[in-house]
Image 1 (cartoon, one colour):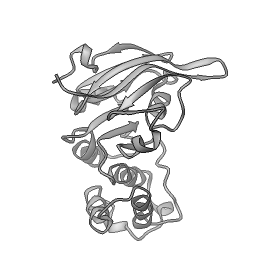
Image 2: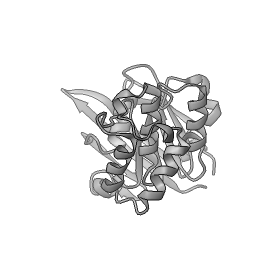
Image 3: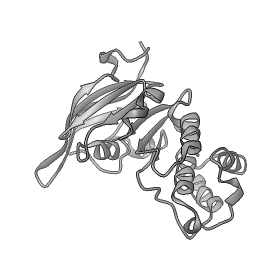
Length: 223
């Protein structure tokens, strides 16, 4: 059986007395690609925010790549890449400047090689000197993906990763991230028509609870 790389135990997030994520327990194997599905407000984005350490749990805990969400959040961040629903880029800066900033933040050892490599792979190299503000939403998403992969994370957490991408961009997303070997993926998506193209299993959320899980080790995830 494959080693577990993401494990949650009763993970809960509460706002104003309302459980947005309710006692979610998962055990995801390394190299798996999990689709988080469910209606708007089901808790998908909040679950990703918990796993990415952007918000702290109200109850429960998670272990990611052997590190506790509560005990080692700073170290854990270096093991994950985050592709949020909003690209969260510095629009006054160029693509080169954006990736350069994050390369310093993550202490990427070879930025002069890694940054051009990624900009070419995501199709932004030709516009690398332009301010982000003048680029389209699709270019923003491409660059956000490059940023998420910049430090070579073991795990990618993505929220609606297809947003803004044309068919060529979606093919690029699949190749570099969703179907990439040796990368564990957890992605929230409304594109249920595409799940079979990349996911090895899915978790369906309803009102913050995991009501269906084909992704966890106990559910028979691929070894």
